[in-house]
Length: 518
Image (cartoon, rainbow, N blue to C red; front, side, top):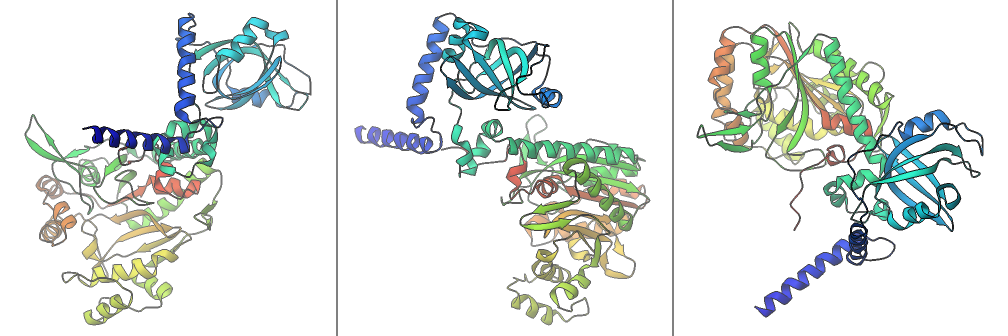
């Protein structure tokens, strides 16, 4: 037992040491600095100080101060007294005068205090009781210092909320990104650029909704818990409903429910939806992600291409303010007319390989082998052609490019192409070498849809088999008649990655999924 205790203590020491590598404050290990801070908080409480208040009647944001008064002359100050609030970020003490920065959700500004302006007792309270990380409310006039810094000359202040932990001044130097994702609140406090990424995301979402709303689309909500997973080929998360004693699936896509709405008479619908796929994690995949799916009656995939181009250009201007973007080291130009290729045509154009459905299977297998593509026995020509496309073409699609006319074999919910029964009226949009959108003229023939569900359900591929379960209710709805319809899904997270030049999907998700801390 003694040995076990020794091992346990050693493990705890190692854990503390590891944490201290990242969270240092003024060259003190976190454990020591935190102990001093806790003793200070305890002493302040004992002295009767109020450390946590219920509110503060502020009358201006920091960004508004900057907007109004950045052009003041040196030494000039306002007659008006303002009440602002924020978190203390940095202290700079100079004898009987102190400068510090406070930050609210709109920006940062310098505070100036001196014994002469605030009195010795309040000045000592400010310098003795407060620390970086505390929330304070201040009253004072705005002026420009001799050094040219816009500042608030503090006449009075109030501690609003005491920070017990140490604010990490050296956060900028952190190389452990997982720690930043795990403690995102700290990331926002000390890295304004990170916060700007999410402001861009919010603007993009607002622009998306405005674009669709202005064109007569109705925003709807469909079930996240579904009895049958459908609308995409992916491994779902499974849960259980106790009262009904049934297994349910977290949705992998809202598609089949949105189509039910079109059948019911809603001609233009969309949903900004959270989807869940029980699969791997990569720089562009997170098990929980956001998409927009929209459906328009009497529209085909050609009409959706025009709509998609117009929408993404609009979102980029509204959220990022430009159409020329940088993404993962590439210059992306959203301006001008976007290029279009058929899948088979793109393989010839970009890969210098000529294949189609008349190509002999053995020849397709030989091409795949040369490209190190593993071919399953049950794979048809459509799957092999798609694998060749993903290998030789997709990484080269840097500028916005629509790839259209996908094989039926990999498009179970898309309408067959009128000129080739092996193909569908489906397109995907690629930007920066990555898929951004997936769309098609919807399959509205219930007999054809049933046969494709049956083929999926008998597949040896587990994902196809699970998501190919026959949704009888959806087929019943389809039998009542669905108008010609175009449907599309756009990955919001990937779009925001593009707009913000982010390397990882984790950089654009507020709280990405991580392994539990040990």
